[in-house]
View 1 (cartoon, each protein chain N blue to C red):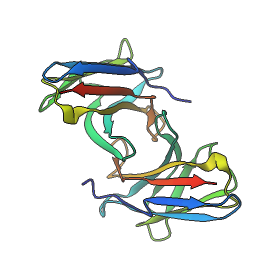
View 2: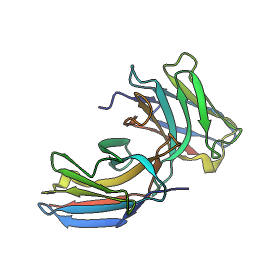
View 3: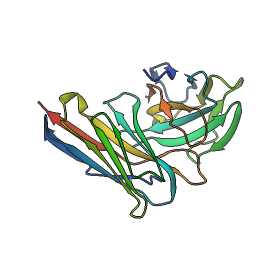
View 4: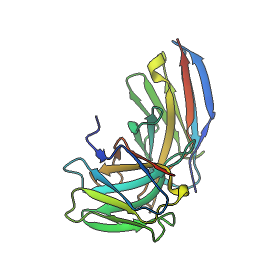
Length: 113
Length: 111
């Protein structure tokens, strides 16, 4: 048990619908990361926060994706107007600081029909 | 793009044998981390090795790092069926905080 939790664990939605995922990091960790993983691939970085500030976004994060960490604790990742290509495992990780171990949650598996 | 490349892509061994997985990367790094992932699950952190370290041990795991060759290896000794999983290396490149993962090595340990 890494201490990072994600909800929901699974989400099935129809194309065009909006979905929102939640991540609760380890409580003392000030850095929070979102990654996406497709079948047979390693995780790919999407975005990360230091406290409530979103410091970097990947080119993978299209304008349909938005992430927030309003109080520097939990984070949400929203995908608007979902597409079939959004089907993937969405992973959240947190770390104590720069260049420190990132601990991952169990992931949210999204299937867009 | 994925910086780390694991080798081999798949490995099948008998229980009790040792398993060695290799990782190569392209740019200078602050540290390199190895993770394990069981099918459809999240990633479990195994070991972090910093750029100024050459070798680290944790239980049955041994990790080496050769920054001159930009490569790392993960050795699992006396493997068990429960070690069956995908193993990923991830680099924390200098000047860049997010981890960059390879495609992983799928290890099967046959009882």
